[in-house]
Image (cartoon, rainbow, N blue to C red; front, top):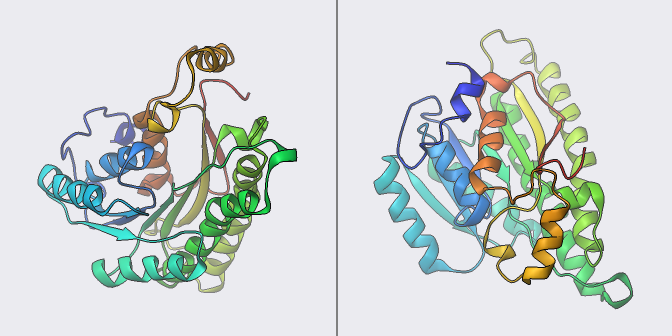
Length: 278
């Protein structure tokens, strides 16, 4: 089975294989929306899931119990404020301590605080940058130390088509998501350099240490439920494929990049946006 076969099975509502058995995946914002779909996709191939969340402990507990029963794999949930560097490091340490290793980090969590530039307050700017960009840096920094020491790993960052195109009222969000492009490419180069210095880069049996980013377009999740019908129709008119994306379509690409067989892909930006930016 090739790497694309691994990610094109839509039947991820149950355990379907073992290609990621024993691998530990930490997905921030993993208990709902796109993050939950990513967890389902990875768990369907036997990955051990650590899902990050920020507030709703009851929902996180229900997520953990449902996943454990459905996929017959170990599942943990980790509460943290990704706008705080110490919390980012703590959650990474927590996952490693609980599961003994960390193989896949998916930086999926993000927030919005939409205002036009002239109305945006200092806190509106910094709160979004702190979570969406700085949080990814501190999580990746902590994970990279562990992965480089072990000689393998995957980091997949979830950016946005807004980071490529910009959007009225989202200067803070666009800047944070665009910043992930440069961060991804730099992390990818440094990861390869770390493995080269330790003699692990040319390991013929190794799966490598890669860092990539995906850029979802407008995806059908609860984040879009508040959008008025007229605004939604305008959004749809800008999408060549004429529809919203599905969370599982984003998850499929994350899974592809996280797979062992994707070891020759690093420092890349993958669009999943229905053709909005091309």
